Image (cartoon, rainbow, N blue to C red; front, side, top):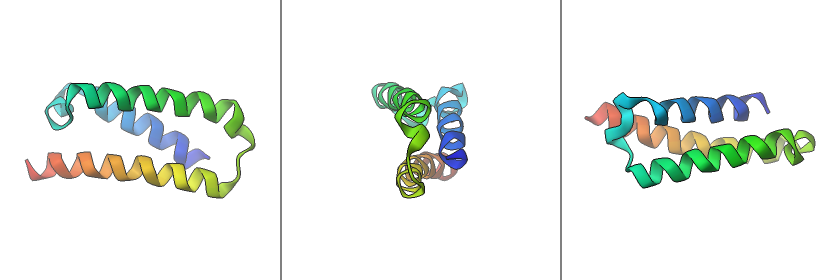
Amino acid sequence: MNDFESMIYKLRGWLRDDDNEIYVLEDDRDKIIEKLGDHEDWLYDEGAHANYTTFEKMFKVLKTDFDKFEKRKSED
C-alpha cells in the first residue's frame, strides 16, 4: 500500500514539474493526473481493505508509466 501511495505522489509530482512538460502531451498529462486522483480516492476508501496483490498490480502500472516518461527524459 505504501509503495502504491508513494508512486501516486511521485508520478503526480513529476507530471506537474514544468521541466518535464515536454515529455508528455498536455491531454495525456491531464488524464493521468485525473487517474491518479481517482487512485488516491480509491486508496482511502475501497482500497483500505484491498490485498497485497491488488496493490502490486496497480503499482506496476504506475511504475511502468513513470519509467516510460523518465526514459523519454533521459533519452533527450
